[in-house]
Image 1: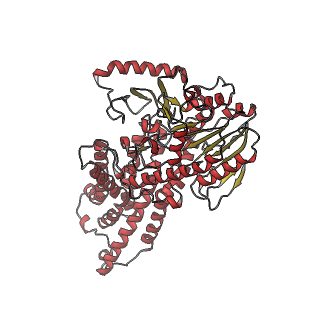
Image 2 (image 1 turned 45 degrees about the vertical axis):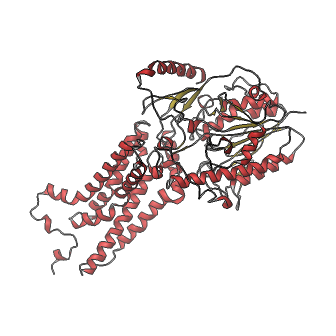
Length: 200
Length: 416
């Protein structure tokens, strides 16, 4: 078996592809995640607080919960998909964090309606963003582990890589600390305190 | 009879319509507060001047607007030397104590006139419901195995019993019913079976909206709301333990720092100028002073009025620094000239996405101006008590808008 055939990343598709199209090819999963998040986010902003009938509360709940998918968990698909399309680990990492980063930008942009620009920018570092970064890392690790198990079944690779397991652990810890443990107050209060130091 | 004792019970985030006696929430029980209202007077138009914890606390003590006392949000500290009603009462021979939530950042102040100061600084002063470590007269004191509402009540009872010789002024400032909405163990789940009707514009997971997420209520709105009501049930029970320790010569005032939105305007929290946020319960029991026990006063009173009222009842001169007015004449049933409008102000409080605002509320209108981010709003509170239909762009109301805008400008000049 050649070295190229052992590589889990499918690079055969890249042969003969225009460089720009090649980049689009491997970042497409991240773009889908970001776009899905933004579309749901815009729909929420459009419909929230305008009850149109009995389906309103259920629809809004669905939108709110659906938005959590691309924001927190799309790494489960985005990581293996990007890696399979030729992205390096660094590129795939940026890919899984693209949606939380988009959320940070949207948050800061909206906060600019209420706070001066630098304070609004700081708002973009909020614990929800940190929690989303952690959850994406964790999801990517799980995605990689599932991918590894799949390849193992096909005799193409090892079952578990240490970094994937570490990503699950670190990502989960970050998410728990940032948003789940006591409602995230152990990060929330220091974050507000830092705000006070910076802008108070 | 000598100078009356003054007991102020100050809760957190208790909205005005959440008293059993109002009948607004069919399942809700507050038997002790209901009895207090039956023995005293209830104000059904009691408002705060800033619907937020720290400013409201400072306003209670000083009788001043936040723009005057300087505690404008939860990040601004009490300015040392700020005069409070404790100063005047202590000078008149009262022994004074503050027991409970202080929640203003920075070092705990030396409150002139206060002989016992018990509070907590954990979680930026928010405290915790279980095992909340206290600072008792400056000494860190672990309190393992305690529930904070019960613990503060115990400490208040101890302090009241210490020196029966002098009149006292005691403020008991509870953490309850603020989030994390943790009722005492035996009341957890007491309202699990009741049906919760959310407002039309609300939905179960609105707690996850960016505008609401910092309230710490993430999860099912109905579940948080049940815990809120159970925490209130626990608070009511503790007040019932405290009240029997008071003599007939004790004036009891129960109120809260602000209200709370439970889905109204798709909000979970406070800070806005809507009634859910600015309207608070206010009950006064004053055996020797009240003309008609069990009556309801409809005149609009504010939290800036509490400090001057306490001094007035104690027969102590009201300092000119206080911006409120004594509502003791309303308790006595006297015919007095009273305000017919209130001025509300709110300052930015990071990270909450609520723009700084100022508002005027009359018996018929609510008019709000925002410093940035949102256009002004106008509601006919008589026809639309939930303040849902914004009339600001309605040509038929342009004259009203103009008048209220002028009225707001006048109030701003007077109070800020």
